[in-house]
Amino acid sequence: MLALVVCLLVGTFSWVPPAEAHGELIEARPARNAEVGGVVDRIELQFIGLRHPGAHVLSIFGPDGTRVETNGDYRQDLQRLSLFFDPLTDPGEYLVNYRVDALDGDVSVDTFSFFFNPEADPPPPLQRRQIGEEQPRSGTLDAMIVGTAIFGTVVLAWIARRLWVTR
Image (cartoon, rainbow, N blue to C red):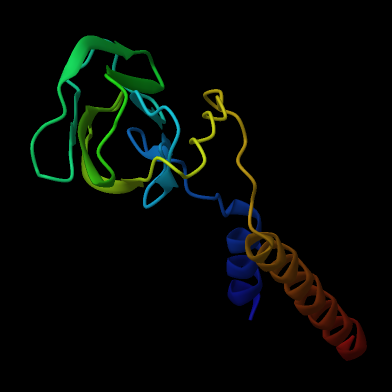
């Protein structure tokens, strides 16, 4: 029984939430599956921990499947990749492909699409999240932590009471 209590205490107080993966896409402009309009002349992707400089690849394909010609302006830093091109004019679905090298050596590859409709609202700007900035946590995780701590306290109180009564 003592071993069970020790395991519960160790499990309760040594649990650490998982870390964010390096190279993980956290925001895109235009966003995945978004319908955007106005002047769309760039793709901006924000990641966690990009290698700088890195062998990153970012490309966009139009509704007809051909690669959108860029104007050669490509920018990157530790969090963001940006690819600039002439403003989109053809309505339809656009495909964005990327491959990025993370600080920890991982490689992330993904594809997503967005829809261009000249009558739709323009895409909102990126939120410019800083490295290490805390993300909103889910209430479920907090409830699990508090629930485990309460359960452990109740078990310890019950054991202490049983020991006290038997003496």
